Each structure stands twice: as C-alpha cells, then as structure tokens.
Image 1 (cartoon, rainbow, N blue to C red):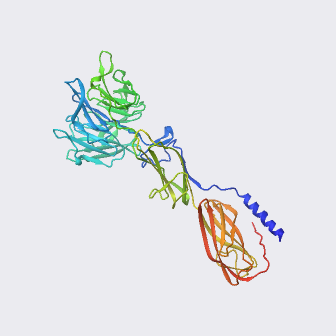
Image 2: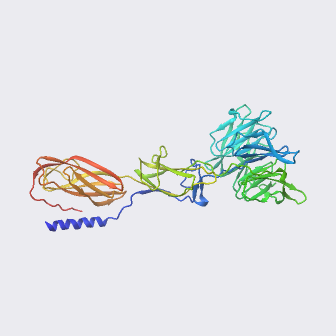
Length: 554
C-alpha cells in the first residue's frame, strides 16, 4: 500500500514539473505609434504623432487666424475675445480696432475669411461655419447663417462679390472640400468632395476663378473646377513641391505667402509649372509664426506669432526686401490656439480566434496636471464599449472583435496628455467536460469514462475524474457535499490555453448506503473563478472494506 502511494506521489510531481507555467492571456494587439497602421484614422480625432511615437491632443492649427483687407489698410484677426477688425486710422497714424466690423460674439472661432467688397465675414469653428453680415451698424449673429456638424474643420476662404465660401476639413487624413452658399438667407452646401490629398493644412481661392490651392506641410496643390462634372480636378502641372513644415498659406492669383513656424517665403508660379521662392518678397526667418495672410493684388503680408503679435511686412524698393511697418502692427492678442480638447483615439478592429470576456490594458502614458486620459474597450467591433482601468483585469461582454478607445482631454490649452504605448491582452476562464474516468470495483454495467451523472460507487471506492479548463486556469479543486475538498492536478496542456486536470476522490467508508454526493469544481485564475456544479455526482451503492488505489494511465 505505501509503495502504491509513493508511486502516485512521484507521478504527481512529474506531471506538475513537466508543464511550463502558462501566461495569463493572449495579446490582442500592441502599438508604439511609430506609424498609424493600427490606428482607425477615420474615427480618431486625436493626433497620432508618429515622429514622436505618441498619441496626443492636436494642436489648434489656425492657418486663417488673420485675413488682410483688399481695399484699404487693415485685417481681421481671430482671438479668444472675438474676431476683430483692425484698420488704419488716419487721425492717429496707427492701426485701431473697428468695433462696427468686429464680431465679439464668436469667441471659439479658428479662422476667418472676408468677402472683401463689403467686409461680410465667414468664420469657422472646429466643427462648423458661420456667415456674419454687416447690417449698417454692426455685425449680426444670425442663427440661419450657422452650420455645425462638419468634422475637423481646418481652413476657410471667401469669394469676392459673392456670399460663397470654401471650407477645408480633414476627413480621415485627407482633404475634404466643402462649398457653401449663403445668398438665400441660410447656408446651403453646394459641394462636398473628398480628395486624395493627405494631411491638409489650408485652402485658398485663386483670385478671379473658382479654382483652389490646397496646402499641405510640403506641397501646394492646384485644384481646377470642372464645370462639366461640378467637381475639382488636380492640375498636376501647377503643383508646387519642396516646401517644409507649412502651417499656413495664403494665395492670390499666381503668388503665394507660405510660412512654417520659423520661415516665411513668397512664391511665384512658374510659367512652366511649379513655383519658385523669391527672396526679395519673402519675410524669411521668423519666430513662432502662427498664421500668414497675403494682401490681394499686393506684396504686403501680415504674420501672426504665437505671442499674440501681428507683424505687418511690405516691400521696400530701396532695399529690395521686405520691411516691417510698425504703424500697422498690434501686440497682446489673446490668440486662439494651444491644444484642441477633448479628442478620441480608436484602434483598428482586431479579431481573435477565440472569444474572451476579460481584458487588461498596459499603457505608457504622460498625464500632466489638468489633463486626463480615459480608456474603453469593445469586444463586438465597436458597437458597445466598457470603461477599463490600465493594469487591471476587467470583465467585458464575451466577444472576439476588439477595439480600443481612449479619450484625451485637458483644461489647460497649452498642455496635452500623451499615450506612448498600449498593449491589450484578453482572456476568458472556462471549466467544462466533467468526466469520470475510473471507479474502484466498478460495476461492469457502468461504462467508463462517462459524462453522465450520477455514477454509482461503493463506500470506500476511489473515483477518478477530470475537467477541462480554458483561459490559463492557475488552480482547480473540487468541493464535495461531504465536506471534502480535493485539489486537481494539471494532467495535460493543449493548444489555445486549454488544460486537462484530474483528481481522485475516495467515497467515505462510512457513507450511508444508499445516498448521493454532489460536487462543485472550481477553476481559478487570480481573483476570477468559474464553477461546475453537479448534484448528484455519485450515488453510493454498497461498501468495500479496503481502499483500492487506481493507477493513472498516461
């Protein structure tokens, strides 16, 4: 008898050490944001900054923060206190605010375009556009001339002598052209066209035409209006390449003022196509440029800096260069800018071979004071989301189509949170297939193995049983209605996180004949448990007076 017990113990030890420890879960996906191949660029409104390997709030790019007047000397500027018109005052010899043509009621504008012949203005918000008309004494806030629901608005320009405008928006990383007409007393959309131009920055109307220039960080595209189709078609011969870091561009007819944050240049169209920068009309090196505007039919350019300063540049014949005119400059503007908030990040869908009901998210993030990032996961392809806390296992609806969502926000427009890395792991814990494989002194009429219960066993008999688990169970045990508790041993590991566990239960020798015994099998992984309950599991019929040990056949 002792020899048999020793053999069983040795077999148990060999079984335990022969199976490596399993990790808890499968990795659904991970992303370090070195590129955007795992990002849903259509739904994502946050900025995926591949150069710095992070997701962050997008900067409030305001390429149309300033618009120069064609007639007279002045410009309109977007600020946190409204859109204000500044014009040269002959009496003081300085530029001054013209309150009559200012728009104090738009404090969330991100761009402005002037009709020029009457100073009516088109203003854009992050998700909308508004046309503001002068009624003879002031600018009017007309609800009929507002439109919202436009995704990721970037830039605006207006046609002269017409209540029409073009608005550029970002549609999943590509330029979308929207034309609007307010001549009927409300805003009507006359064209929405998605282009193949990636990472758009701004749009300008080619003076005297229906054609457009669309700027990206490194290119000025020419879009020609096709009367036959009512669509825009790129004229590749007029494309200007070789630019760098463009944040704002302003076009007249064949000339363009273009700026990065550190360099502003003036470009002429070439007769053979493309364009060339001309140093004499270029501002050159600048500090923290924010937006630029070109005065129609002129070389004059107005530049807004991030410090809230408007620099006014004009051509000087004597020096054959651009010089500043301090009488046309202002400082101390409370500029719109910083980071746009809140914004969302969505991963692509990731489909797993099995369904899972528990996830854990690992993140590397930077969350400064006054900022936040919240995380959500969907297991049904994005139809429903469950809030999750990084580093914690969270129960979710069982599913196999995973999407990760994050909401980034800030109450400090100059500070953004960042997500540098994410890894989503998923698992599920299941216990099933309770099977009795052997019973000491088994009745030959009882076929084994069996999953049909109860089985019959004599008091004192050894009953061998097993279960199957999925989801990296760490331990399994069985509790019987007799009060006994039996740990199960990992018998064999199968693919897909599946394990087979076996146990041995000796029916008490003093068990009442007849009686029944129930079983509860528990599988555990961390704080999570799953159970199988079968009652009755064993029907006690008869007795044996010696406990027989059963060998395990591997």
